[in-house]
Length: 114
Length: 111
Image (tube, rainbow over all chains, first blue to last red; front, side, top):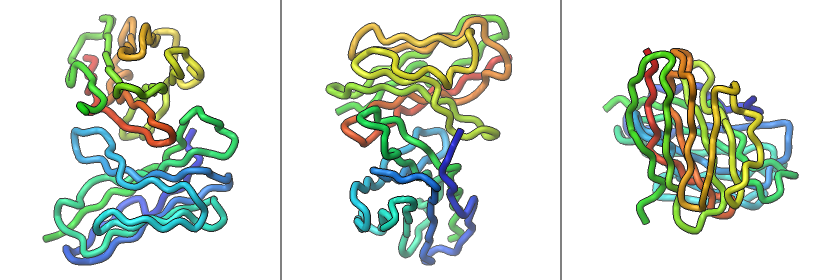
Protein backbone atom coordinates (compact mmCIF):
# COMPACT_ATOMS: atom_id res chain seq x y z
CA UNK A 1 0.00 0.00 0.00
CA UNK A 2 0.88 3.66 -0.24
CA UNK A 3 3.28 4.99 2.38
CA UNK A 4 3.29 8.67 1.50
CA UNK A 5 0.95 11.07 3.23
CA UNK A 6 -0.05 13.81 0.84
CA UNK A 7 -1.96 16.88 1.93
CA UNK A 8 -4.23 18.55 1.48
CA UNK A 9 -6.54 16.04 -0.15
CA UNK A 10 -8.29 18.78 -2.11
CA UNK A 11 -8.13 22.52 -2.60
CA UNK A 12 -10.56 25.03 -4.08
CA UNK A 13 -8.92 28.36 -4.70
CA UNK A 14 -9.39 31.60 -6.56
CA UNK A 15 -7.48 32.27 -9.75
CA UNK A 16 -4.30 34.16 -8.97
CA UNK A 17 -3.77 32.61 -5.56
CA UNK A 18 -0.69 30.61 -4.63
CA UNK A 19 -0.98 26.91 -3.81
CA UNK A 20 1.06 24.71 -1.52
CA UNK A 21 0.92 20.96 -1.04
CA UNK A 22 3.24 18.47 0.57
CA UNK A 23 4.11 14.84 1.07
CA UNK A 24 5.58 13.26 4.16
CA UNK A 25 6.79 9.83 5.10
CA UNK A 26 8.44 8.00 7.94
CA UNK A 27 10.93 6.56 5.44
CA UNK A 28 13.91 8.21 3.78
CA UNK A 29 13.67 8.83 0.05
CA UNK A 30 16.41 9.28 -2.54
CA UNK A 31 14.22 10.82 -5.20
CA UNK A 32 11.02 12.85 -5.17
CA UNK A 33 8.83 13.35 -8.20
CA UNK A 34 5.75 15.52 -8.68
CA UNK A 35 3.10 14.66 -11.28
CA UNK A 36 -0.06 16.30 -12.56
CA UNK A 37 -2.96 14.29 -13.93
CA UNK A 38 -5.63 15.84 -16.12
CA UNK A 39 -9.01 14.11 -16.49
CA UNK A 40 -8.82 11.17 -18.85
CA UNK A 41 -5.04 11.33 -19.13
CA UNK A 42 -2.03 9.74 -17.51
CA UNK A 43 0.10 11.50 -14.90
CA UNK A 44 2.62 13.89 -16.40
CA UNK A 45 5.96 14.46 -14.72
CA UNK A 46 6.37 18.07 -13.57
CA UNK A 47 9.52 18.14 -11.45
CA UNK A 48 12.14 15.64 -10.29
CA UNK A 49 14.29 16.17 -7.18
CA UNK A 50 17.42 14.20 -6.32
CA UNK A 51 19.20 15.88 -3.42
CA UNK A 52 18.16 16.84 0.10
CA UNK A 53 17.48 20.55 0.24
CA UNK A 54 17.21 20.84 -3.54
CA UNK A 55 14.85 23.53 -4.76
CA UNK A 56 13.75 23.26 -8.39
CA UNK A 57 11.42 25.40 -10.46
CA UNK A 58 9.44 24.73 -13.62
CA UNK A 59 7.68 27.91 -14.64
CA UNK A 60 5.23 28.83 -11.88
CA UNK A 61 5.91 25.55 -10.10
CA UNK A 62 8.55 25.16 -7.41
CA UNK A 63 9.32 21.96 -5.55
CA UNK A 64 11.68 21.20 -2.71
CA UNK A 65 13.33 18.04 -1.45
CA UNK A 66 13.10 18.21 2.33
CA UNK A 67 16.30 18.36 4.37
CA UNK A 68 15.31 15.27 6.35
CA UNK A 69 14.70 13.41 3.05
CA UNK A 70 11.33 12.38 4.42
CA UNK A 71 9.24 15.09 2.81
CA UNK A 72 8.74 17.24 -0.25
CA UNK A 73 6.75 20.34 -1.11
CA UNK A 74 5.18 21.70 -4.26
CA UNK A 75 4.16 25.32 -4.68
CA UNK A 76 2.21 26.83 -7.56
CA UNK A 77 2.30 30.59 -7.83
CA UNK A 78 -0.39 32.77 -9.39
CA UNK A 79 -2.73 29.88 -10.20
CA UNK A 80 -4.66 29.84 -13.47
CA UNK A 81 -7.68 27.75 -14.53
CA UNK A 82 -5.54 25.23 -16.44
CA UNK A 83 -3.78 24.30 -13.19
CA UNK A 84 -6.90 22.27 -12.36
CA UNK A 85 -6.15 18.58 -11.92
CA UNK A 86 -4.81 16.02 -9.51
CA UNK A 87 -1.25 16.44 -8.27
CA UNK A 88 0.66 13.39 -7.08
CA UNK A 89 3.91 13.14 -5.23
CA UNK A 90 6.00 10.03 -5.70
CA UNK A 91 9.22 8.92 -4.12
CA UNK A 92 11.93 6.38 -4.63
CA UNK A 93 12.73 4.99 -1.22
CA UNK A 94 16.30 4.54 -0.02
CA UNK A 95 17.21 0.91 -0.52
CA UNK A 96 15.16 0.55 -3.68
CA UNK A 97 18.35 0.33 -5.69
CA UNK A 98 17.80 0.79 -9.39
CA UNK A 99 14.33 -0.73 -9.40
CA UNK A 100 12.60 2.54 -10.14
CA UNK A 101 9.70 1.34 -7.99
CA UNK A 102 7.91 4.48 -6.83
CA UNK A 103 5.71 5.03 -3.81
CA UNK A 104 2.81 7.41 -4.57
CA UNK A 105 0.87 9.85 -2.46
CA UNK A 106 -2.91 9.83 -2.48
CA UNK A 107 -3.10 12.94 -4.64
CA UNK A 108 -4.24 16.53 -4.15
CA UNK A 109 -7.22 17.60 -6.24
CA UNK A 110 -6.94 21.26 -7.20
CA UNK A 111 -9.84 23.34 -8.43
CA UNK A 112 -9.38 26.94 -9.53
CA UNK A 113 -12.24 29.40 -9.66
CA UNK A 114 -11.83 31.97 -12.45
CA UNK B 1 9.63 10.78 -28.98
CA UNK B 2 6.06 9.47 -29.01
CA UNK B 3 6.06 8.69 -25.32
CA UNK B 4 4.54 5.57 -23.80
CA UNK B 5 1.85 4.17 -26.08
CA UNK B 6 -1.09 2.19 -24.80
CA UNK B 7 -3.92 0.46 -26.60
CA UNK B 8 -6.80 0.37 -26.61
CA UNK B 9 -7.67 3.69 -24.93
CA UNK B 10 -11.09 2.37 -24.00
CA UNK B 11 -12.37 -1.17 -23.61
CA UNK B 12 -15.87 -2.27 -22.73
CA UNK B 13 -16.41 -5.97 -22.27
CA UNK B 14 -18.72 -8.41 -20.59
CA UNK B 15 -17.94 -10.34 -17.46
CA UNK B 16 -16.07 -13.54 -18.22
CA UNK B 17 -14.39 -12.27 -21.36
CA UNK B 18 -10.64 -12.10 -21.82
CA UNK B 19 -9.10 -8.63 -21.92
CA UNK B 20 -5.65 -7.80 -23.26
CA UNK B 21 -4.07 -4.41 -22.70
CA UNK B 22 -1.00 -3.40 -24.65
CA UNK B 23 1.92 -1.10 -23.99
CA UNK B 24 4.90 0.17 -25.94
CA UNK B 25 7.44 1.83 -23.63
CA UNK B 26 9.69 4.70 -24.58
CA UNK B 27 12.61 3.44 -26.62
CA UNK B 28 15.70 2.92 -24.50
CA UNK B 29 13.86 2.66 -21.21
CA UNK B 30 14.67 -0.60 -19.46
CA UNK B 31 11.96 -0.69 -16.80
CA UNK B 32 8.23 -1.02 -17.41
CA UNK B 33 5.43 -0.72 -14.87
CA UNK B 34 1.71 -1.60 -14.94
CA UNK B 35 -0.62 0.34 -12.62
CA UNK B 36 -4.32 0.33 -11.92
CA UNK B 37 -6.17 3.45 -10.83
CA UNK B 38 -9.59 3.60 -9.18
CA UNK B 39 -11.36 6.23 -7.13
CA UNK B 40 -11.42 3.97 -4.10
CA UNK B 41 -7.85 2.68 -4.11
CA UNK B 42 -5.97 5.33 -6.04
CA UNK B 43 -2.91 4.33 -8.05
CA UNK B 44 -1.77 0.76 -7.41
CA UNK B 45 1.36 -0.89 -8.80
CA UNK B 46 0.48 -4.27 -10.30
CA UNK B 47 3.78 -5.52 -11.69
CA UNK B 48 7.04 -4.22 -13.06
CA UNK B 49 9.73 -5.49 -15.37
CA UNK B 50 13.41 -4.71 -15.58
CA UNK B 51 15.15 -5.60 -18.85
CA UNK B 52 12.04 -7.59 -19.84
CA UNK B 53 12.17 -9.73 -16.69
CA UNK B 54 9.31 -9.53 -14.16
CA UNK B 55 10.79 -8.30 -10.90
CA UNK B 56 7.84 -7.81 -8.59
CA UNK B 57 4.30 -9.05 -9.27
CA UNK B 58 3.10 -8.80 -5.69
CA UNK B 59 0.54 -6.20 -6.70
CA UNK B 60 -1.23 -8.47 -9.16
CA UNK B 61 -4.60 -9.01 -7.49
CA UNK B 62 -5.35 -12.56 -8.58
CA UNK B 63 -4.32 -15.36 -10.86
CA UNK B 64 -6.77 -13.97 -13.37
CA UNK B 65 -4.18 -11.28 -14.05
CA UNK B 66 -1.02 -11.99 -16.02
CA UNK B 67 1.59 -9.82 -17.69
CA UNK B 68 4.29 -10.48 -20.23
CA UNK B 69 7.12 -8.56 -21.80
CA UNK B 70 8.39 -10.60 -24.74
CA UNK B 71 10.80 -7.87 -25.85
CA UNK B 72 12.01 -4.41 -24.90
CA UNK B 73 9.37 -2.63 -26.92
CA UNK B 74 6.18 -4.44 -25.99
CA UNK B 75 4.23 -5.61 -22.95
CA UNK B 76 0.76 -7.00 -22.35
CA UNK B 77 -1.50 -7.18 -19.33
CA UNK B 78 -4.16 -9.86 -19.61
CA UNK B 79 -7.24 -10.45 -17.48
CA UNK B 80 -8.98 -13.78 -17.93
CA UNK B 81 -11.78 -14.06 -17.03
CA UNK B 82 -12.68 -10.43 -16.42
CA UNK B 83 -15.02 -9.34 -13.63
CA UNK B 84 -16.90 -6.07 -13.01
CA UNK B 85 -14.58 -5.19 -10.12
CA UNK B 86 -11.71 -5.08 -12.61
CA UNK B 87 -13.18 -1.89 -14.06
CA UNK B 88 -10.51 0.80 -13.72
CA UNK B 89 -7.96 2.79 -15.65
CA UNK B 90 -4.82 0.80 -16.34
CA UNK B 91 -1.58 2.70 -16.88
CA UNK B 92 1.71 1.58 -18.30
CA UNK B 93 4.85 3.55 -17.44
CA UNK B 94 8.52 3.29 -18.31
CA UNK B 95 11.64 4.60 -16.62
CA UNK B 96 14.65 6.59 -17.61
CA UNK B 97 16.94 6.41 -14.59
CA UNK B 98 14.63 7.47 -11.73
CA UNK B 99 12.14 9.43 -13.82
CA UNK B 100 8.99 7.55 -14.70
CA UNK B 101 6.79 8.43 -17.65
CA UNK B 102 3.19 7.32 -17.97
CA UNK B 103 1.10 6.35 -20.94
CA UNK B 104 -2.39 7.78 -21.49
CA UNK B 105 -4.06 4.74 -19.91
CA UNK B 106 -6.71 2.24 -20.91
CA UNK B 107 -10.14 2.75 -19.38
CA UNK B 108 -11.61 -0.72 -18.84
CA UNK B 109 -15.27 -1.26 -18.15
CA UNK B 110 -16.46 -4.79 -17.39
CA UNK B 111 -20.22 -5.14 -17.50
